[in-house]
Image (cartoon, rainbow, N blue to C red; front, side, top):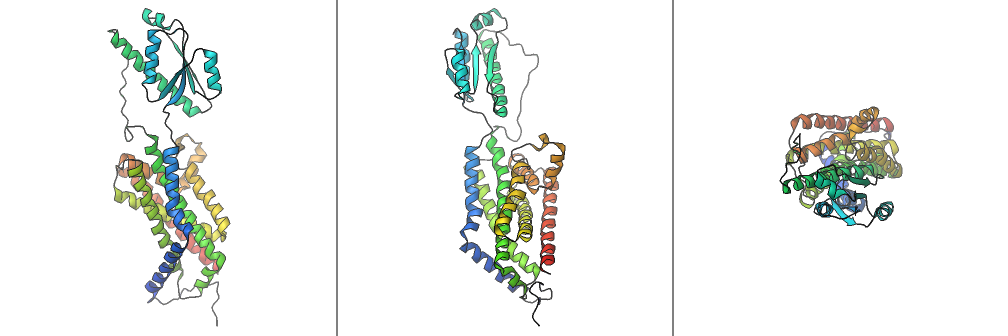
Length: 386
């Protein structure tokens, strides 16, 4: 009597389990070597994304073009202009009048206008208030806020230097001494690159597994395996282990680029980073496996993998957008996004170090999600094939 091709063999002999698993692993690794798309997703895509985000995306405002207009140039206005020229944040352009400056602002040739009135020098020497007008392009709200803060800092520093030159003590009822922890240079790259690694690992884990398993369903090779002595557990291990190795290779490449190309500091332990990355990759592989079981079609599986893993990892993980500023119901939803926990772990390990009060709960959450997705995938395969 021929076995039902829809029923996995549960009574396979135990003696040859290791040999069967080695055969499956050899088959998968050979298939990876013959499939350029898998190599590209694991190794080429991380390089491209890291180069694009590392060099092309920045949350810092530097070399901002601003128009400097002095109605009646004087030594004091020239001194203020020099302060802006010596700042790394601005590239001031002297314009003759306000209409010209406003036209430049509308044309997006400059992002702000610094307007010094005609009586600026006289009022400053008399000790009366000498205001300086700042007009900022508010189309990009975050950029506008950064420009406002940078202009205020340059203005305050210039006032302090001017007071010292005149032998006066600048009135400072409150002295603020700022100390920046974990990212003292305030480089957005140090924040973006570790978060991007989580997005890359999500794509590698979920997309690779979803496409590969869906291809097996389309070709009918997975059903063919079910009539052999191979057990369901061996099939899952044979599929997960090669892509786990491939994903960890992509992770190693991403971390290497982060450390040596972008010079992001790694304050924590490399062993801990490897461990939490393995947990997250298992969760991503489980998600990809479950997607392929539901879809059984490469095109549909790829779309589902992007919608259910990549987009949430990009938007709801805290990679770019602060979770604390999201609506309450959306903050609750982020707890089911595995990348949320991995982004926190990456930021902590790269910028703060081994902070165990953060590492342990987030690592446990990733472990629970990995067990959940892989467990559901195993049960779903059995259910669909019976």
